[in-house]
Image 1 (tube, one colour):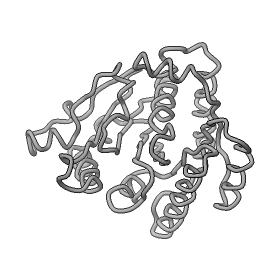
Image 2: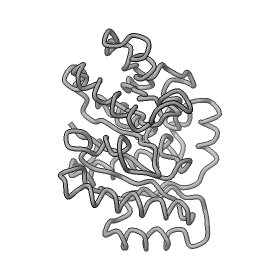
Image 3: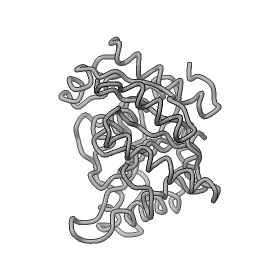
Length: 255
């Protein structure tokens, strides 16, 4: 089982990137599980055609230990097994602790043994890697972390902080940094700035995605680019990225 966590500044395109990679992997015949670790619970939104599903925390609050795997794990586009950890009622409780509770419940219910995913993708709220938000990279969860960034200064700043945290956690046996995913916003010196970041954090740019209106058009349809515009150049870029991520994990291509 390949286990990957994707972090990055809020709004940088993590969920779009992860959902499109999940769709690529699923279309290639892999059993894919995508776990959204964000209180907004919108990671798998476009894999479900814009229909929001109940989160693990909502189900736990409603049913306690009686909650079933079938309620927590719902199939989306291409058969992607979708999970939304969810978060506390706004103003009540800690979102990080919610992620811990959700992931521990999946483990208690033997989700990974029962579904036997070939690849698990954790889509994690991105500006901090502490407490519950570090849960996906702890031992037994993800093995590699990829950071999504553009060339915008705040995105690069967040990516550097995330990389630093991952490096510190790696000393405890947690997941290692797999690389940077450059999601272009067409800012000045974008490639150079992200290359400098990669050098500073002793990593590399794993893959690059162009800024494209196709992504927004697919989002308006509540679909991934792979589903809505499968023959587009942008869909090809997501396929290439998925292959590059697997190679960075030492697993080869997904053809």
